[in-house]
Length: 127
Image 1 (tube, rainbow, N blue to C red):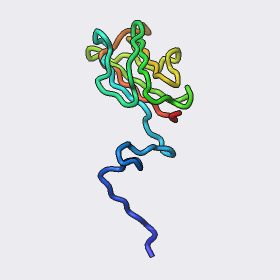
Image 2: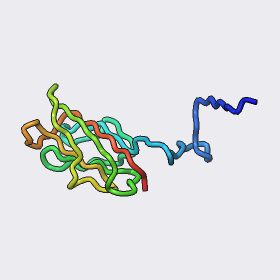
Image 3: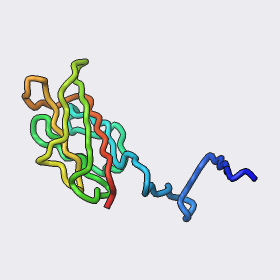
Image 4: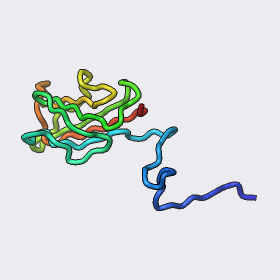
C-alpha cells in the first residue's frame, strides 16, 4: 500500500486551539522588526516578539524581546536606509543580550547615525 500521507489545512494552532504552534526542530525567525529610527521617539512600524524599543544615542537601538533567546549567541542581521541612501546596519554586540537585540546604524564612513528605516531579524533558540 501507499505509505504517503497528505495534510491540508488553512490554519494550524496549538492544542489549546488559540495559540500558534511551537517550532522546535525547525529553523525560523524568532524575532524581527521594521523600525522608524528618525521619529522623535523611534518606533516599530511592525515587529514580531518585540515588546518595546530602547533608543540609544546616535544610531544605537535595542529592541526588547517579549520572549528571551536561550543564549546570546543567536544570529542577528540588519539593514538600513535614510533618505534613499543605504546606511550600514549591524548587530551591536554591546547591546545584544538574551532579552534584547542590539543595533547600530550609520553612514558608510563609520559615523553612527539614526536611520529612517531599519530592518532586523534574529534566528536561534528561545529560552
